[in-house]
Length: 78
Image 1 (cartoon, helix red, strand yellow):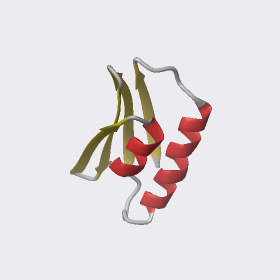
Image 2: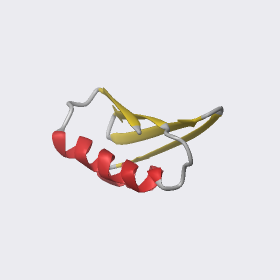
Image 3: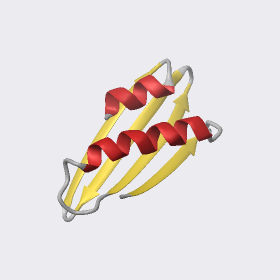
Image 4: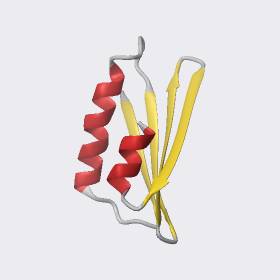
């Protein structure tokens, strides 16, 4: 699985990257072929926004959530 992480208005963090990788490994079992995941972290005012786009073959899945904690936003979006 190829995972691309983009940070907008937030510093990159090894802890956040590790959390993404662990969560993506759990999602991998639901897909037949290798997939691509694009994870975007964004901070808007005091909201922490997590977006994920998963691509498999010709299908694309998109989810977005926000909250006061980036880890919580990521967990809910997955």
